[in-house]
Image (cartoon, rainbow, N blue to C red):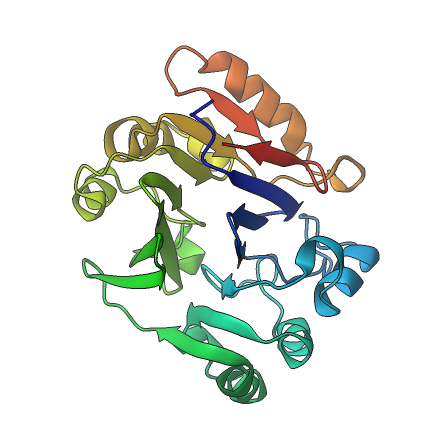
Length: 259
């Protein structure tokens, strides 16, 4: 992979990841449980460790959410986590969290900075998280016509020159992403399996993001995979291997990759 910059990324469940870089930890879409849907949530032990700040969850600095669907976000457990753990930053959508007033009140107390994202399409905002970590955020439409009114926030994180792009559940809009990324040199991009299963998704990867490495996640654990997505992902990687960047698949609890 890339020259080791000290970035370790751990899969929790679905699109929930924990990024460790030097002495900073960033949790993205990482507080949720399975509420009867097709995707895995945090296990009971993982959720307990997270809420109580134990093991890999000690001293989490920043908590980010791309959007507030139940396979990415749980308001009650996020509040419980914050009540037990002070963080430097809580970043989440504004519109989608307005109904969770108790969570937002807790965030005001337990986070040094709570940022409620309200960014119109085609605009970007930048934040300096630490001296060597910067964050660029922009809004994209959630994929699927039934979710066209859901804001999905994409995160471009710059770790002292190494750029990681989190697309969340963004729609397949090549020209839009090309414009928003503005030819940024992206080292690692995280995408869900639809991007390697769909022609338009492949176009977004190759012509808009153009990363050096691709990480595919948002995949059920083996025992939860009733929709047989793991098999489809394996098939798509073989099918498109010559046309996409080198791929790492994250689909097992606590699976780690290091860059």
